[in-house]
Length: 296
Image (cartoon, rainbow, N blue to C red; front, side, top):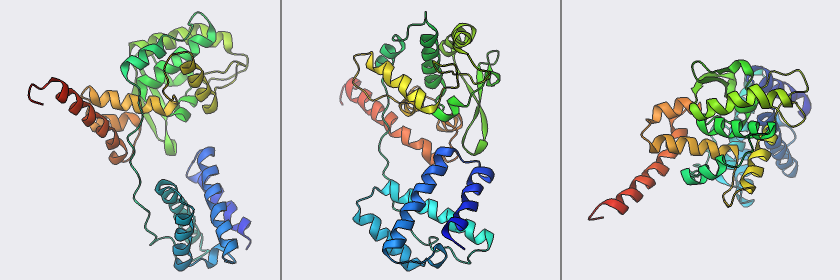
């Protein structure tokens, strides 16, 4: 069986059974290609002939390339999943990556915007024009909910409930959750849907956010919109949908929200993924303490 014949069912499994996004499948494909390149340099004939000793050599290979711990951990996770699939399909009996310990991930404190920086950003869009109405609604919703960019692009008109002030979000693994939004996001969305979206729409689509040509707005399009908005301010901060997600989580915790609630709103399956934001909150608490305590 050729390498391609081994791998094609795995990619179909990721897309159909696991319901992984196209972006995730591409990342898996790139990581596997990287391992295949290593196999070629080491004259390993087939994926089914890889041993634990080969895996240890591969880890040394990655270390010599000065690859980050996060990237190494991602590659190991990908290849571990590949061999679990091989075992399930009866291609092999053992997973050579099962005992390979992933390096501990670096937990950099996430970048976020301060409230004053956000205030400047919210004043940029020209809401007298359709694209300005869309941009304002997009910005307000991303900050109000902390949803991921692909979750935002996947929203349809039916997913917005103005009576309950919630959106139905389809997250990773096709898992759905309801996320509330506030007054500012509601007003911006209502203006955009009633005016801007109708003016923009040129094709039949139920997607909430549309691009300038009338089709669904893509994740790349969202990043471009936010990048252009930040350029119109005097701010020098880096802007992206994920920065707004970090900002949402940080501000929620700073204002007293409990960790479990923020975890639910973000769609994190593991609480440890949410706990990174507590580092930011603790730093703010320390800053406030040092500024205001008489004997600090």
